[in-house]
Image (cartoon, rainbow, N blue to C red; front, side, top):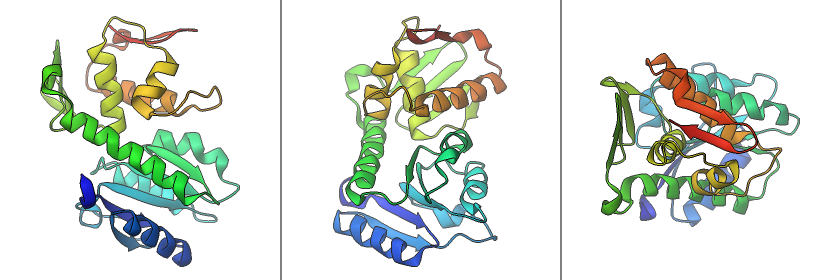
Length: 231
């Protein structure tokens, strides 16, 4: 993705929005800023974005509402930036479709490192070695890494890049139990913490989407104390 990484900043704190824009621009990203209001988001607002930084602030909590709205038409990665005191919204935001969550105040370098991890996950999905194949097909499930798309019985299942990568790794290693520690390293690219439920939320959303598309729940198994398995 090189210098073409495009970051959409949805943040009502003007000073913070400018800081984010300057920092990401200085690190090779093209940025666009927009405040979050009652009018919501459209597909045009997010067109071309490789990553969205979305503020979550009191008292309106517009961010969560617009995150849910966004996921109805766009699967671009989203990092939620939450005001102090909203840490309890972490799980809810991940369940609404966020890819990552960071509480304010935060260190810009940490935010950028998380953004870079997301960019690497996208590159992994698109550019992984040809010897590994570009498509996985298991019964009625088809995964296309070049398009970052999943289909069940010919119907597309909307997945974020992280959700797609998680599903790909599970399907690629089907019938094997993959530990949480392994999945954190391979999918989320960070060390496992027993207080971090990010992986659980991403897996839960993937599972719900597949089941709603017609897949039997038994295909996904949680092996207590060991990890997860796609059968």
